[in-house]
Amino acid sequence: MMKMVVGVSESFSAAHSIPGHKKCGKVHGHNFVVSVEVEGELNKGMVIDFFELKTHLKEVLEKFDHSMLNELIEVPTSENIALHVFKELKSRGLNVVRVRVSENVDKWAEIRA
Image 1 (cartoon, rainbow, N blue to C red):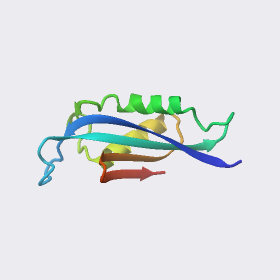
Image 2: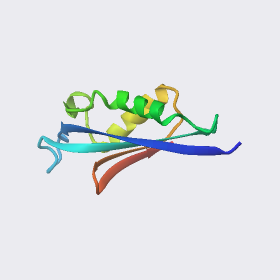
Image 3: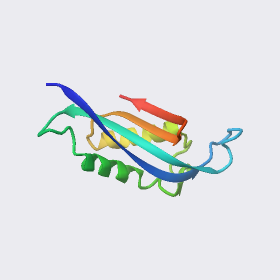
């Protein structure tokens, strides 16, 4: 059977600083956008219900929204946020194939399975 990929996006606002970084070492904030894709076979016309996938993503991101990311992730780069989201969604049994974290329209980090 043919596999298909579906995805959703969700946003959150948070502050962080990157320890030791010349510019980003100062506390600053972003409106992050996190996009997730999962792969699977069609079952009753869907890979996964968009509502279900979005609910999982919102639950994973809930602790990040309006937080100081340094209190949650040792080095809160977009790369580490993507890795954290990827692992959390995988641990929920989702067949995640891509997570992209954008901190601005022109900067992002992406992890692929």
